[in-house]
Amino acid sequence: MTDRQTDRQTDRQTDRGHWWDAFVGQFNLNVMLSALLGEWGQLGVGVFIVISAYFMCNKNGIHSIKVLELCLETVFMNFIAGMIYLVYYHGCTGRAFLNTALNAVLSPISGQYWFITPFLFLYLLFPFFQSALLKLKEGNLRAILIILLITVSIADFLYIRVLGAIMDFIVMFILTAYVKLYKSEWMDKHAWKIFLLSFGLIYGLSMIVSAASVRYPSVGSVITRLFVNWNILIYGVCISLFWIFKNINIGHSRLINLLAGSSFGIYLLHENMYMGASDGAFLWTKIFHLNDFLVAPSLMLRLLISGIVVYFISFAIDVLRRFTVERLVFKRRAIQIYCNEIDSKISVN
Image (cartoon, rainbow, N blue to C red; front, side, top):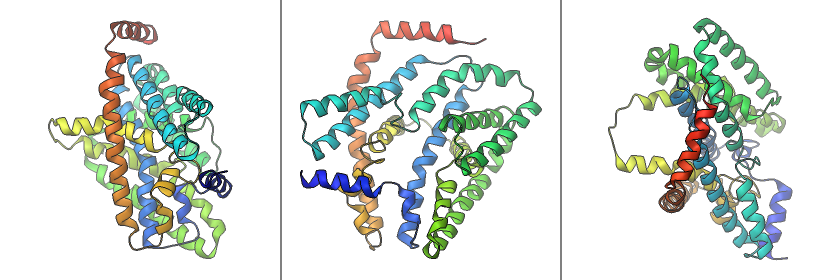
């Protein structure tokens, strides 16, 4: 057995892979800032749901070509991440290559990404939600939303994960639809207040629990309930953050469009079962060795440099995908016709 394979077994046994674990049992500036950055992966997914809901809540039907694009992007990025992981630990043998390829093909529906499979399921339900939401009166929709916000937040805090992330995404969709349809002007005025209050409470409470866990380690489990499990505060951060940027007029920028078009691909490449969610966060602990500098003064500089390196390498890979694989597939007229036929059948009047 090679040294790298031995390291892999050790990491699995010690289960060192979650950024929120850094909160438990220690309290210093590096830990606080690291966990603060780690939270934005969770919030990024929430904002993605808000964006999707905002532009689809009062439209009829879906665009199945978007589903196909998302699946193809997920498969491609999962395969690239798997190959990097494979070469590092094993070398590219025939059987391992086939397993990696199969995992990539199944990745959109197999639950390898905690957010992809639930989002695809929700997206296919969008037409039915659209029809139901537009038929409800404001008071009825508000009552349903309040009940869902309270019950789902409590259930998530208690680890009662009914339907997993699907239920969380449904609540986010209904919340976004309600605000857009009935409270958009109010949110325009109060988005900053909601963001600062929600984010401040999440982070402040987490720091208090983290400090307490130095003496009482058992209370550290509350961190995941505040940071990771969905709750009213996280919903508030996601929707207010979107409204803040929605109201900023930056005009048309080809550079921003190019960067924004690759942001989801970058997330898929570095946050998956190979790079960020298993074996002690392979990307950050094995390639960049950030865990060795958790209490060192240079941690934040190393974190910044490693983040920039990962971003631009991932960006280059995603641009290559967009201008090769994506163009090759979606320029075919037959695919466009087939997707249009599916859209017309799924549309709910």
